[in-house]
Picture 1 (cartoon, helix red, strand yellow):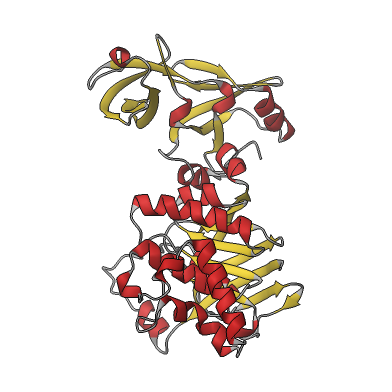
Picture 2 (cartoon, rainbow, N blue to C red):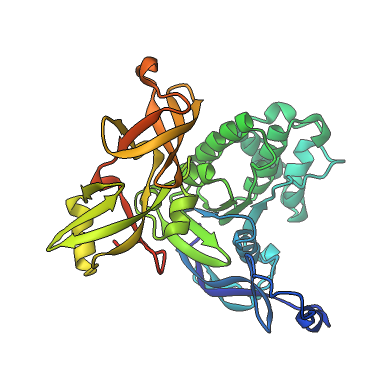
Length: 393
């Protein structure tokens, strides 16, 4: 199959003639607008910047981030649907910047399925093979094998309008895999499906990955998809890579505040706190509590020679514990989630979410109750107030 390497990839959308001059004109009363998502330069709008990534053969990589972060643009550059402004894209060691999409040996599954409405499922899947003038017997074999893998054999004679959203997406995936591409690109393929179908299709994609020897590059804004599908996750923001790592790495060791707040559901709680160093020991001071960090965290902070300072402290909702003493909080909302209760509380002037197991329903706090909670040092995440980076790394 294929290794894919992106070296210093950059994408700039040039201004339309006269657009830049027009954008510079503003009245005296008009304040400077804060640039959101994309960087504006004299060249144009920068959508992707300094993108470096080595994707191994048969690896499943997920690009994830909020809308406008550049993930789909990056995918389209790999596909050849967008020109690369600068940098190099290599597939199997060959630079393919100027290679036409049809000659890159890649297949792409789009968000809106992009099926031909006048063709049957069979003909939709066979279309690209017919363009290659493959023998009819070989086309039939490939189509039926793909249909068997995706459990859509019974729909081969139907047209797309007679299929559900999930069935259409299977056809779109089938149309891609019949070509046995070196690289499979998937651009938010599940975003048009309801929650139940998304769960089912995620499982199908995991099974599919085991059955075909292809490198996958998958784009989504859904962190659940990213965490369950990817061998590694690439988290993007404003055209820049924020962190690359396994799902467990980015969850347990977020590189900065953005990653910490983006990965995890419910989102991580953040507090204004103080980090105190006493020799080789480190403590977090919050709400009158002094909590010693774990030896692993202390070793990393010590290696970076981190000194006592004001910090942003991160603690995930599932790592908070109700206690008889500790950090004071007031319950604002109590949400029953089946096996647990999500408590929305106010503590240290912040909105905080706690996840409490429903072992004893009689002990679950109600709205307005005054409670205490604690956490242990090994689950604390320490971020710089100045740079927002994780001080352990």
